[in-house]
Image (cartoon, rainbow, N blue to C red; front, side, top):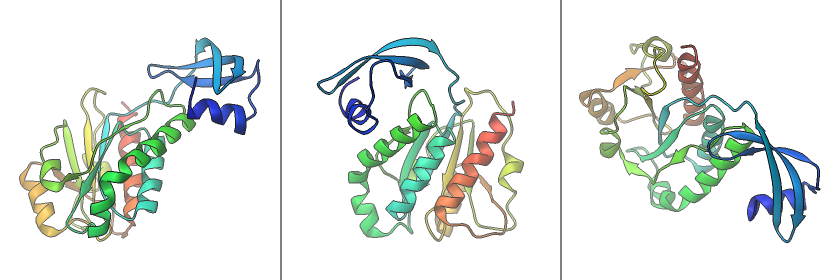
Length: 222
């Protein structure tokens, strides 16, 4: 192990020969015993696989909102096992956030990687460059759901069903203030299912985390 992770182990955690850590290899999580710490490099002797977090084939289409809150949503949704996060520039995304969003992708990926390691995932979620709503409409998945703040929508837990892991769910969460009416109409015309989290108005980051938890819970019940 070299680079940032090695520096963190050596300088912050004061790692020493003989200590053991869980190592995410990309394909599995294995128990590793340190055999050498020197010159910004930490070497391990890898042992048996350990239990890793169960991943769900959930793509989170996340409209861009205030960066500090969005980062918190990315961190928590990573812990809740999303496979992909697609940032979207929506009608109600502030213009300065939209303009700066492309430069934030690397930071979002780093936050997701750290959250992935903390939650013992084998790999972090993919985080794409920001796209427009019209591009998001064409994303493919077995079930595509857009959250809408409306009391006449079915509840999210009523429209998600257990299904095989290879059949993914795409979940679209709007910005602060929700999706604009014409955006919701476009989602519906493209074949997306509208669903609600109830009659309580939630912040965007709370809605993203709550919705991800509901979908992951249902998928894991298969």
